[in-house]
Amino acid sequence: MLSIAMNGSLKALKLFGMAASYDDILSTAIRERQTMAQFLASLCQAEAEDRRSRSIRYQMGTAGFPVSKGIDTFIFNETPINEQLLRTLYQGDFLDRSRNIVLVGGTARAKLFGYSFCLQCHPQW
Image 1 (spheres, one colour):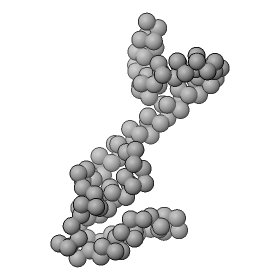
Image 2 (image 1 turned 30 degrees about the vertical axis):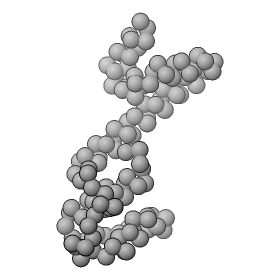
Image 3 (image 1 turned 135 degrees about the vertical axis):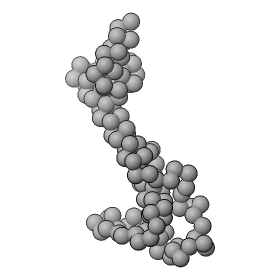
Image 4 (image 1 turned 90 degrees about the horizontal axis):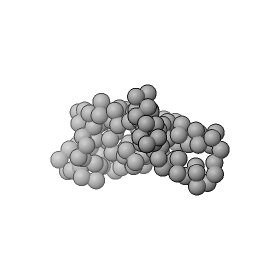
């Protein structure tokens, strides 16, 4: 009963990450005899992760990336795109060197590359 009331309160406060993971975190805290500070830290971490995840989903939707496409399904024969160069860029070495890239052409191709690259770097999206 208390758990239901707590979930309602957390949702009313728009703490959806805490509400979703409250029961699991509470049972873990009891089992591991965590302090209240540890319990609250776990709840805060769950909320932060949920907000980050929701933000990424929103940004990916706003970007208008083609959800069903990926670089592996792209047909390079029908385009003037240099496949080897694109696959090299797709490795992401330019990020390690703090370099930018500029893709010139139709937005669909750039979005395909951007979406596929984001999924490669962050498969949990």
